Image (cartoon, rainbow, N blue to C red; front, top):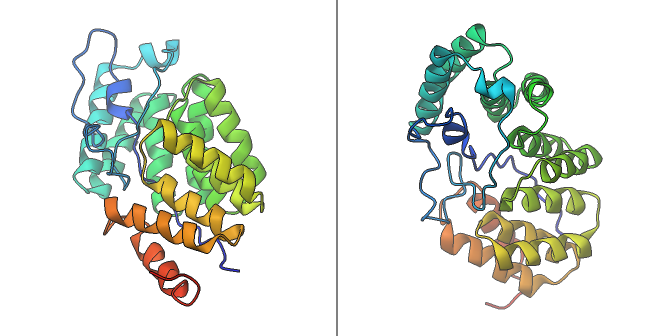
Length: 253
């Protein structure tokens, strides 16, 4: 049995910049503003099917300077300047320690560095500040899945859905948790439904791992090739190529 290779999939920054805007503001450019390019699933790629997020008092009362620093941090991350992004988000949080989007970005950056405890602290603080803001729940689910904490990941995705999340990334994390628990049929159902309704090429990777768990190797190979068609050098491409090589003796081309 080929084991499920879990790789950290911070393939989105959601709509953090646009969601940061106060009512009436003009949306600033964010790393994921390429929604017409659904194959971009790597860091900074789009979150397809993003739901509208209910705006809380904590988010409406953000000082303008903190909001500006946060938007600068999102832009810096999109330009692949993590140190600059970290500096700007730290400064934003000094001004407003309860700023939900900034706390979420802080947790996102920490997770990208595999600083799990710091990531969880930031994301949990964001959730405490605004329980109806869904992005930190999904990032937290990814953090839990990457650590093999599948029950906690499932709990985080349930909260994300309750908060109004409607993005392929939620189904992706649900599938990862199910695969991690060996519930391959349920994971396959989730990925099939998600791929029917939404874009998100990493869903092909999750579906492939569900099929591998069910020993349906030819179909798994098809899904991996579908992913590589969209993401020939994406975040999961190395793993996809490696698994396809291992399948050579089981699947005819």
